[in-house]
Length: 159
Ligand SMILES: [Fe+2]
Ligand SMILES: [Fe+2]
Image 1 (cartoon, rainbow, N blue to C red):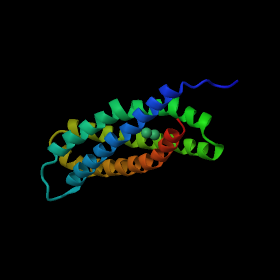
Image 2: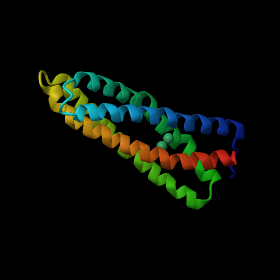
Image 3: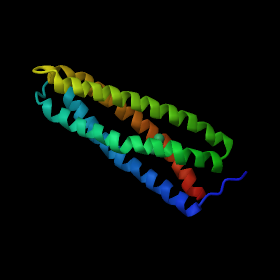
Image 4: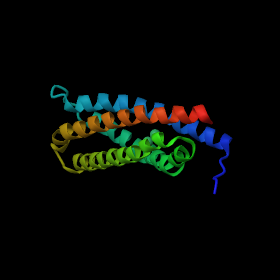
């Protein structure tokens, strides 16, 4: 059975999802700056960057999480329908990367919670590990977006 695709609807969705990558990229630039401050021994203000990184974490919960779900539910099936088999292979890697990014985000959430609830000294103690995980997330997300943008560009060329 051939699946019927509403081309206009699909094109709008692809464009919308692709645009989100630029917002996420900006957030990663911000997250990298905050992580570097957390890892800077000479910078004694840890409360400020910890609070701001927690705001980036909520962007993951409210923005990136639903974005991943939408890609897996709508975009990747579209790739499977529209693109040749050699391009479809990338999808398994994309899903793997979603899982890896999400594991790190959960780790970040737990570390931030420990910093919040750990009493005096916990913020200073957690600053370095939070900074490390945040930098890993930044690296994973940038790599993912760079690869995935190629998929979006190919889809935009077809639709
Ligand atoms: Fe994406
Ligand atoms: Fe993705």
